[in-house]
Structures are given as C-alpha cells and as structure tokens.
Image (cartoon, rainbow, N blue to C red):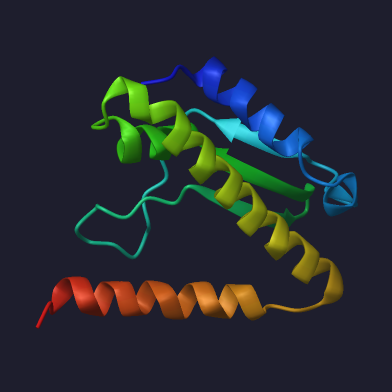
Length: 129
C-alpha cells in the first residue's frame, strides 16, 4: 500500500489539475487525515467514508480519509494500487467539491442523492434477493 505521504502527493497533483474556481471560499482547504472513517449507521462495519465536505464553525473544508483508502485498496496487487487509488481520490475530491459548490449556492441535491444511494445499498446488502 502507498504511504500516507505518497497519497498526500497524489492528492496534491489531483487537486492541482482541477480549476482553481472550484476551491473558492474553501477556507480550510483539503485535509488528508490518517484514519479510516466508518459509516456511523453501518452495524456491519464494512462501509467506509472516503471523504467529506464540512461546513462548520471552523469554516469550509474537505477531509479525505487515508485509512479508508487503505481499507479499500490494500488487497489489490501493488502494480494496480496507484492507478486505482488515484482515480478514486479524484472522484472523491470532485464529489466533495460538488457538495462545496452546492453549499455555496444554498442547494443540497447531492446530499439527498447520497442519502438515497446509501439507503439503497443497505437494503440490497441486507436483502440480496
């Protein structure tokens, strides 16, 4: 698995490829934290949050969870990890930036979509028939 520092470097590259306008008013930036983040509503403990957009008293920022990426990708052969992880990091960052842009606009469509998607996933997982 890639180290925390290596993933941080990849995240910097991915963020640098995106238009600067997307980061407007994201005063806390993008943080890479070492821990995994498990879904609080998941009793099976097999759903991990890859990243999240936060708007609180500290401002607006995006958190990316290195440990969640480790959980998701540590089983892959070493030659596949970097490519897969880079794609997932980009997808996660764009997803969280979309939450940020919606928040600036006073919208919450993606938040609602995320909740519905998680509920469908739980129902399908718990009742595969």
